Amino acid sequence: MEILVCIKQVPGTTKVEVDPVTGVLKRDGIDSKMNPYDLFALETAFRIRKDRGGKVNVITMGPPQAKDIIKEAYMMGADEGTLLSDRKFAGADVLATAYTLSQGVKMTGNPKLIICGKQTTDGDTAQVGPEIAEYLGIPHVANVRRIIEVGSKTITVEMDMAETVEVQEIEYPCLITVEKDIYTPRLPSYKIKLDTQDREIKLFSFNDFEDKNENHYGLNGSATQVERIFPPEVNTDKELWEGTGENLKDRLFDKLKEMKFV
Image: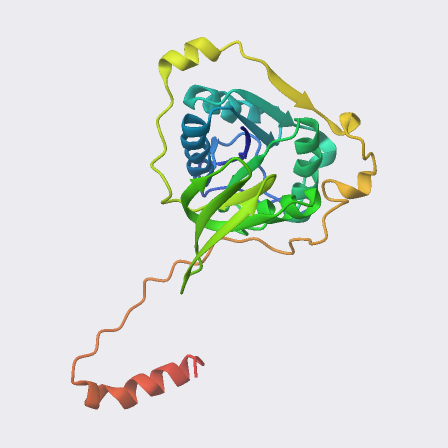
């Protein structure tokens, strides 16, 4: 079975500046790491490969330094890696990102199963995975917390739907996004690092894609624009009241009314 895992390089710190004109994060010159949720997606792929055989490949979109997370994936056991990198991809929202990744997926072969982390820590939208599937025209399931059975034609999973748990069986090819508690990710191996340090990383740019309409990529292809990004204000003000619930209920109501919560 050929499995493709979508991974992303995200800032390793919360102290990231925002471009005041475009509203996108300034990623140059800051420490980066693999998106934590993608580690769970990788581990899921490795567990399936162990049981069913096949290959685990990874794909990412980003600047040239995003090769670092592909090398990290190699150190964990990934077989092949693909980087989609071009200035025309910069500034993409979730829609343009998903479209670009879908075009890259088409160039990597025909994976039976695509696995994504639930979301990224720099966007937190949880939309890219399902949107990739929509662009590819394949079924998808999100919020997967357990793999029940991996068959030859279908995969059966358990989904965390907040108030309910659902079981779904979907046919290949398909895409799933996994929760952070599905498996404990393995650590990178120094031995594997030595064995894979010269392994090729495939690189595709805008000119390699079949669709060369620039309005489908990057800022041009983004349906949404960020007007403002700012860190939340830290407020440590507090009041301590003493008394019984009966005595304090009117005071609490008046306070909430004063703060315009009610």
